[in-house]
Length: 356
Ligand code: IPM
Ligand code: MG
Image (cartoon, rainbow, N blue to C red):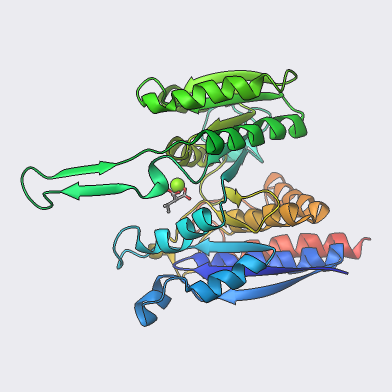
């Protein structure tokens, strides 16, 4: 029987609750599809930091690096300095594991979940490929005359040819594999951020290797407008890190909210990290009101990545079925109990097992 080692950081706020449901679903999927998941549970997050001053120690990080994938519930806590735990855990993984692709599918499972009038599942089915290790995120910043009236703050946006090319190539490969519109849209802000001219040129170069794939381009501000007005125009979109961060939250809303949006931080062929896009939502923590669908879908993306594609498809199918049948009535906080949604997905997967 195939077996996999997964590192699990349940994290802060609603992280542990949604992770618990995701793990229950993954366990059922493993038993239905005949594989084993061994979990390396890691205690890191804000609470752990407050107690121990440890963020993500090197020894634990090296161990996680040896596992097949890392699953992250959510991290962040308003009691800590902005970015401390995010940089110490998420950014550490993104940079040190070189997770250069942030794959964020935006798929509407049912018309009723879409805030846009008249848009159906056929109209909202795209994948945003966000570059994940460069741009404004490298941490290169500084202050001069801190605290003084003439204070200066700078942050450098970094784009390398290699970093740009590999993520653009990933997007083209994905468009080919999806075999839908066979289109890649470049979303950037090259008209203002002149260094992104590198993206313009590299995109055109890589496109010549994919004559079967159509190309399109939109500046990020216009792309936000099109995403709302004509989401059906998109298939695969590729974008620098910061533009990608922003537009994927918009995308999450178009597909039904933060309760459904999942993501994979990927270095193809290497240990990669899967997480719901939502944060730790401290005000909802411990109340059993957070929607675990995004967390469950992040688990499905992880299974797909480690090679259990059928299991991933069956989890997505179960969720889609529950939403379309109206059993899952909405994906907002408090529409259902967190465990209630977990139960529904688990029951649907076990029913599928019983009928085999
Ligand atoms: C995301 C988050 C992170 C990001 C934060 C927590 C640093 O918003 O994964 O989209 O900006 O990348
Ligand atoms: Mg974000």
